[in-house]
Image 1 (cartoon, rainbow, N blue to C red):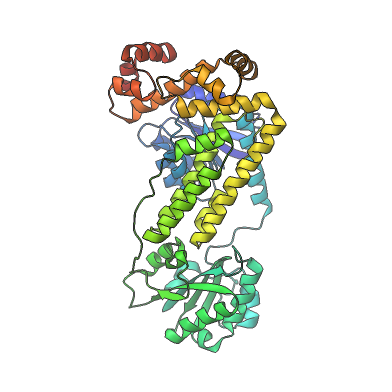
Image 2: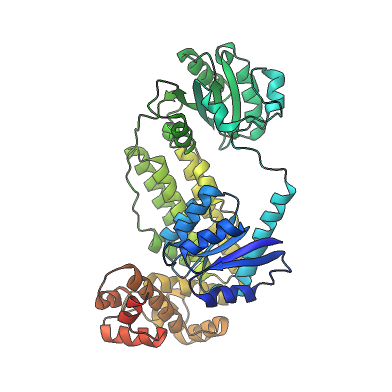
Length: 509
């Protein structure tokens, strides 16, 4: 049985979660619950669960900070964020912290069961695999030993990770970019590494080779410290084999960075070759990039693109932002954050607008690949492909679902785009879809069981709750931001919807 825990300050929520899923049938046992962030961390330490459902808004310590603390200790535990807040910044941080998904409240039975099934497959697959190798172990040690006898080992065949690295006098970090494709296959990486080890100018003093991925390689020197000729030989070797190499070199006594900082900084891929300046040796002390955020009004553009199922305007904006980043030498990390923002917001919009039983559009987005890219052009192609694939599948799914579902999706998207407009009306939505008002209202009611204006009101009230708890705006300002010209009308509608006045809701949230 896998162990599962719930973290939520409202008891009713994890009671509901407990009833929505046949946990034991699926191989899970509920072992603990927590109502605040500190209690959540203590529960994690005590129970070591395999799966955690984590609310964001928690007393004492918020959910994202809990995730960050847990991830510092354990990268394997499955964490699903659950929140009523549709703020994309939460989702972005959650993905950076390595959560498995981000569910919006209210969570339906179907969505929750699908999520649990997906995680069950992940956990089962992990159990069937061999014990994970250490990050710094060499998966090709035996084969490399046959080719290059200098690779050191302990008697048990395992390489001591950090202690062994501390014995190095110099360390190369290589980031490779194939000149003929997007990614370096693992088999090709293995072959090239073996060939590199045979170069005399490279192999002199070399004690360690290990591969982190298809685009990442480390070379360690324990005695003889490599000179400039070794760096140039490495660059030339990979160029001969159709790979561009970006080299980071750390030398004991020369670098201002400790070895641990060098490893973490170079591994973060804040790489100088990101804008195709490959074929050089870099020092981490230098920093050629601008820490300028790409602030783009993505929300409305994405919603409009989804409503019309036309990604062209979105892709055009992306091309413009990437050109700007290249021209201004914006930090690769910030450009990758921008790319992640785009995919996260598309995912959120689809989850909000699309009937969950009909859409599996985001399963192939592979957002985690964003931070593995080593080239601006590769990242742009990756992002544009994911967008085009999502829109193509959206179109296919809509055609398959039928006219009614398509109309509901477009109407919900349009409401998200226009609900803050005081002049917004059902007629505007019907005109947008291209059908009569009467037909639209009856069709929407038939497909959703809800009146369209009820849906609009839900959007407005949810946004109002978010503004009341996250800003100091006056009640009148909040009212105008969500489409109410009258503060009195907004307050009456809010109390009708929540059972509390806006001021009372703010005081008790």
